[in-house]
Amino acid sequence: MEAIVPIEVIERKIYLICGHKVMIDNDLAELYCASIKVLNQAVKRNLSRFPEDFMFQLSKGRKMNL
Image (cartoon, rainbow, N blue to C red; front, top):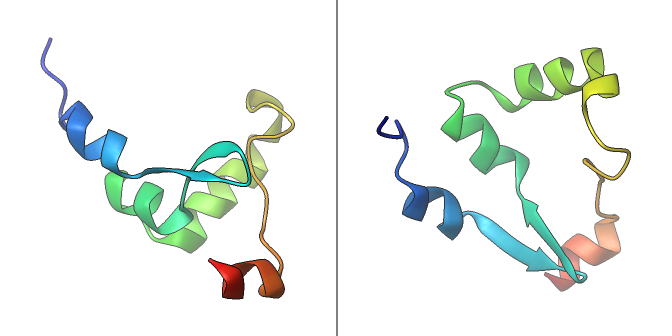
């Protein structure tokens, strides 16, 4: 079975931030053809399906340093 999105595209959207491999919500929303708001709502409705450390927000100070 061939992937809809090439693995190379996904790999380029994975960043190492603060020692963690992460994907930015904007990139995930783009991959799923959804808005960030809809993506975040879906995650919040299904929190039990995700590990505790699945999602986090950077502080304004941290964002500025990136």
